[in-house]
Structure formats: C-alpha cells, structure tokens
Image (cartoon, rainbow, N blue to C red; front, side, top):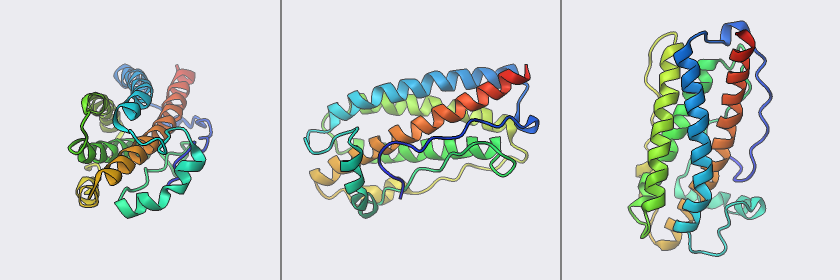
Length: 203
C-alpha cells in the first residue's frame, strides 16, 4: 500500500535528450497540466471539509492517516502508481501513462463515493478538474507513444462500492481517496516540473 501522508521526493529529471519532446503543442499541454494539477490540489482541502464530518479524519495528519492504511486495504482502495525520475528504464511514456492511470483510478474511486455523499458540489467540481487534467496528460502520452496501447483501467469503483456498507465506510473511503490523491498530485507536480525544465534546457 502507498503511505497515506507526504510523498517521497522525486529526483530532478536527468534530461536525457531522447526523453525530450520538441513540440509547441506538447509544451502547451505541459503548461495546461501544471495549472490543472495546482487547481486540483487547491480544491482538495475544501472538498474534504465539505464531505467529511468526522473530526478524527484529518487531511494533513500523516500519523493518523498511516493508522488507517489497513482500512484502505479492507475497502479495496489500491495504491497510486509510482512516479519516479525519468531514466532509460522509466521513460517519459511510462511516466505519462502512470499519471493517466492514477488519475483514472482516483476518478473511479471518487465516482463510487459521490453517490453516497449528501454534499456533492465540491467533489463533482473536483472530478471535472481531474477529467480535464487527464485529457491533457493523454494528449502528451499520445504524442510520445512508440506504439499506441490503451491505458490500463482497473475495476476500482466496483470493488470499493461493494465495501461501502455504511456511513463510516463512506467517510473513510472518501477521506483516504482524497489523501492519496493529494499525495499523487504532488508527485505529478514534480514530474511535470522536471519535464518542463528539461524541455526548456533544450530550447
């Protein structure tokens, strides 16, 4: 399971020439993605406040969130894909694919819980921003793919929905999904920054 707390730092992009993309549209998608992920991250605290009424479920409490990891397993919440510094073994295509898969996973998880929440305005808006971000990531992925292949989609929503037996489970699942989305989003910020810096050095 992923740790439900602060993300581990991602090393700066090493800048191998073969990883760079000399395409104005690609660079625009990078910029759009950077704006959208910041929008997503900024929306998470308000979304959490609007959905979570349990005082024990605190967004930025690393120690408390670590204690809840066993519940993530029991509820069927998978770990977010790992994002790393780009190398010959972790290519730009792999990085973008994992971003897309992680965003899709969190979309599916949030769609599963939103049906059980009383206040859905903030989480619905967050879902829209995640969708828009994934569109940008997929545009970049399409530009760098060696051979087109579909992004893996896991049946996460079905798995989670079957475990939402009561209000407590809904609250915990929503909380853990937002905590993990925040951590994964911070990883995306670092990865996009590395890509933008590397492309900037090439110009």
